[in-house]
Length: 70
Image (cartoon, rainbow, N blue to C red; front, side, top):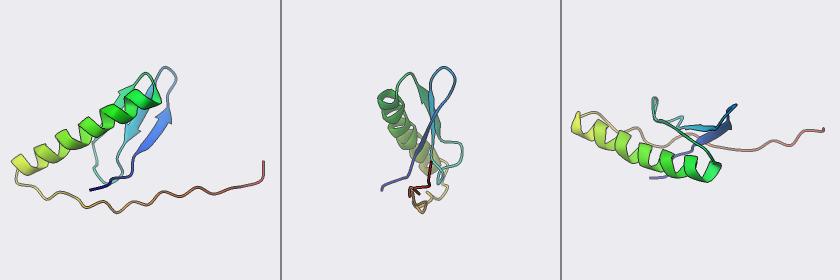
């Protein structure tokens, strides 16, 4: 499955979350580290849902960019 992630710059690091998996978050010192950690967090989150017998939300979020005049 392919989930959309959002990575945001925080004051001292980067934070990521997965819109389709509420509660699935990760933080890291760099964008690359944060992306790696959110991949692990997604796998861990899905394993937890499976072990609890809960449904795994299908990816449904879409990501687009919009250009606006500066």
